[in-house]
Each structure stands twice: as C-alpha cells, then as structure tokens.
Length: 126
Image 1: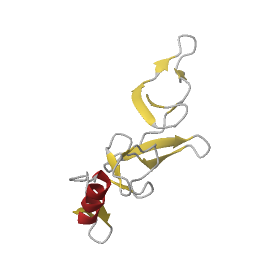
Image 2: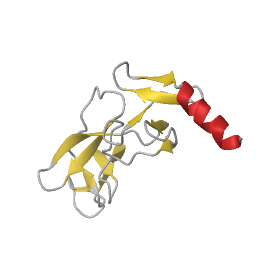
Image 3: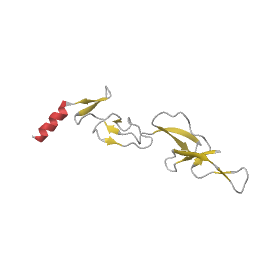
Image 4: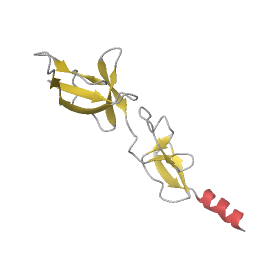
C-alpha cells in the first residue's frame, strides 16, 4: 500500500513510499504523521505543486514559482516567490531585463529600452 507524504507546514507533496505492516497486527499498516493513502494528482502543469488539505482530505493544485528567477517589473530586481504566489501577483516576470535602461511594457509584455533612464543617469553623473 502506497502512502503519500506531505510537508507538515506547507502541506506540499514530498514523496511516495510503501507503508510498513504492523508487526503486531496482521493486515494493519502503519502510517507516519503527515501522510495519506490518497494519491496525488497526475499530469501536473509546469509550476504547479499538489498540497494536501487535511480538513477536506483532498489534494489541491497550488502555483509554485519558488525555484524560478523572477524580475520585478518596477525595479528589475530579482523577486522570490513563496508557495502559492504567481509572477502576476508579485508584479514580476520571468523575462530578465536586457539592460539597466529597460522598462517593462505592459502592452507588449516585454522589456523595452528607455532612453530617458540613460539620460537621467547621465545627468546624475555630471
């Protein structure tokens, strides 16, 4: 019998393993804390993670951009997502800026060169 282990805090799926049989009771299996016999969903999309809801006894699919390098659309700095956060919710993008003089363009969803940023920096250096 398979058991599906999940993190005690985030409830995200960690691993699957074979349950141990009880040495004292025949046909009884031992289940560690933070595990379930309910299988995780299959065929998950990229940047999705199953998390177990202990109240409803179901897996839900949560956005997972924790290991993706994101860039703030306002500051161009790297942004780190927590489990459940999306680039849109963080006002960020996975596209890196190509220079220090780029600005995010919502219409085209890309970075565009902004000469006014370069001009502003040059004035500060004078």
